[in-house]
Amino acid sequence: MLYVVSYDIPNDRRRTRVHSALTGYGTWVQYSVFECFLDKKQRMKMEARLHKEIHHKEDTVRIYGLCGSCHSRVEVLGCGEPPKEEHVYLL
Image (tube, rainbow, N blue to C red):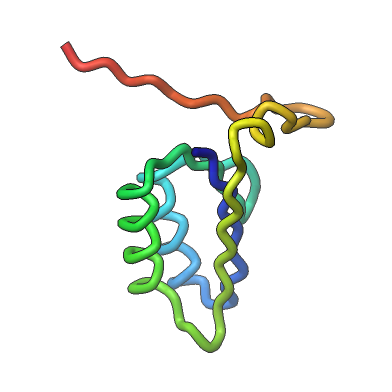
């Protein structure tokens, strides 16, 4: 499933840690926005990691789940490409 994760974190150090955490789960598409293709287990792990990194009274992280039909209707205006799932093959 595709998730759009956005964050608003006023502290530079925490913001950098959240960015680093999300880099392992998805693609950075804008300053504070990631697109992540995750299964349920991966999403739970990502959320657990984010809970450890943020200050719950100062920071905001939003996770928007897009269903299959919603994902196919994503439009990008200007430069950039619609989100696509990266396939990794190990031989």
